[in-house]
Image (cartoon, rainbow, N blue to C red; front, side, top):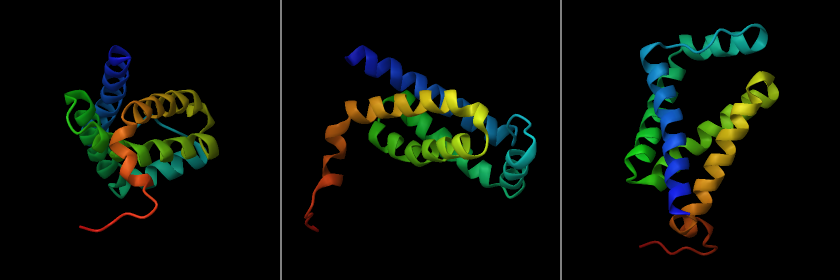
Length: 127
């Protein structure tokens, strides 16, 4: 199980670290047409994708280094949800890659589930 967690952590970390670098350095993704192209171009011109790229870079780096992995998963979670929604609702060609990201993230969330147990406390106490 430890080897599987390590492999999945590195794969997901590399994917998002590389994607984050691409957003920051190149500032664009693959060319798209139609509504997807209009939407992505708007996100790029407003520098929104640069911020998302920075978050991908940080989350991916945390997974690659193996320190603060739950924080990295927490950063990447909303990004993966947005990729999933974009793929399902607008750009249907990206569903396969999105499904892989969801499975990898879910596996790591399960592997690190003890780190997230405080989130499910019904009556937390403030310190």
